[in-house]
Length: 303
Image (cartoon, rainbow, N blue to C red):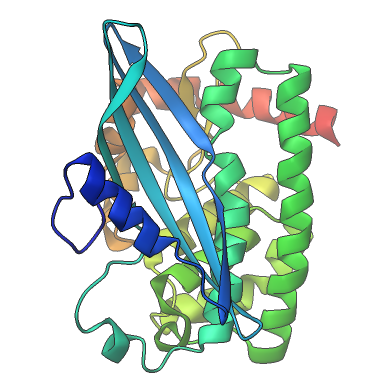
């Protein structure tokens, strides 16, 4: 199932479709990466999901598109596996008016930001499955984090150059995806970098070139790094023993949902529902001194 066109069924039709997609042309070349995020066995059925990145280099200019994919397979009598359903969706929607929508885009800058986005997210998307398979603190996880940090360093050099030369680009020039690329790199940077770009990021939010919810996530993380309490409750950590997330030190917990709504965020309870955790404000206030003591100890240890 390819985005924007009807479902393709039957061996011959599928083969013809792939031949058309991967046909060799002299004016460009295509490279692809499709890392697997999760394999879920279900008896005689199995689901595999992952992310993908395809880069078409035309006349020396890379044009990158990222996507997510799912394959559903069924076990056959001879113990082989047959793909029953294969679908992917681009992170950018396809529509008839896309050329008009993209008319104001700086396509070369968008291509650079697309690659930055993929380099940031493709490895991070594997963290959960790798931890489950190899365990936190394993040599495999340490190697993965080394690769993540390496990519972060390269991405930060590119993003710093963009911000130093152009300031924060208008969303009309780089699109929502480009905006997210810039945000993610600064969000994953060190405190000094975040302090440096705080005025630029705040202005981008005020100018509606950065979603309020992303600014809230950025500012919460920066506050915690300063040793202060976050104000929107976006930052969580995983308990070493419980293996469950808990909310990092939060200012005025009783009114946090009012602040979250102003930033386009859902409520604390709605956010914690994914882990089946109940947001009990009174209990959190009681536990807050212990949480702050724990975080202070960790900060001292890490520094």
